[in-house]
Length: 345
Image 1 (spheres, rainbow, N blue to C red):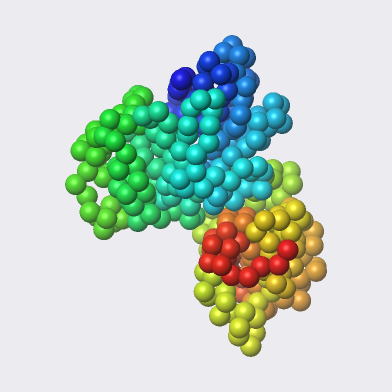
Image 2: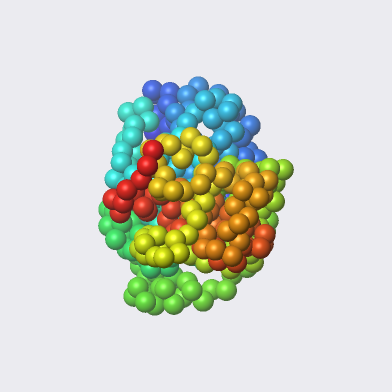
């Protein structure tokens, strides 16, 4: 097995490969370093089976779509990933092969809803769920400190103590640690109760990453700045949210909302289906088609997408465009389907 970090910087990309069989996956590749990765693959005579992101990144553009374009490797993420560019959605507990190696997926949300870790041959790639002596922040949209604590203590810390940890970031020059070491020495987690951890994470008061909107929004929507004028961080923070129970109540009321589905046409009729009565207005077309829903400016509107991220962007755009009662469906069609609620296709 080859398990190697390729960036040599605080932001980590990992190569997992069966050198004898000639198969590999890249985990969390950066768009800026795609040529480097292709050179490494060529040097070792490896075929790239998958490009994988452990979560929706807010600090760098994903290289997975570019790798798919250049060498045909499918783009894989966890089921809750919002991007329409993803080809393969991975489930908790799912296993896949890289040559003769077996990789197991753990859904480890908290930093983001779609966070996952990869277990292979006594090693675990923890993404931004668990760092060496730290963990990922939980104050981005969809972040949840309680879920982060559960992911670490109930999944990662139940792995064998000698399991080697490979984090998605490190800012102190560390390269690896072990589950046992992090259990006993990680200052954010060792000897902390769940309430203690939640209080700590909710009061870090960290600044957002530089250029977060230029990175996060394209990663979650597969759109660029030339295709849409994204809302800023402050506008997104103001978006009101409704959960699936709340939306059911709204739909049963005397004044049901307009449902605006902002996914791509193929998603609207795809595996997740769509909500009855919803209007399809892909996010990339929203600004140019506002006149089609202009009569609802003073009425309730709920925006919908795969996992609640693109629809948050849409809700912010509608808010800045004069719509006065807009909510975003938390969890989107993934949550709706997981609850066993009806959809149309």
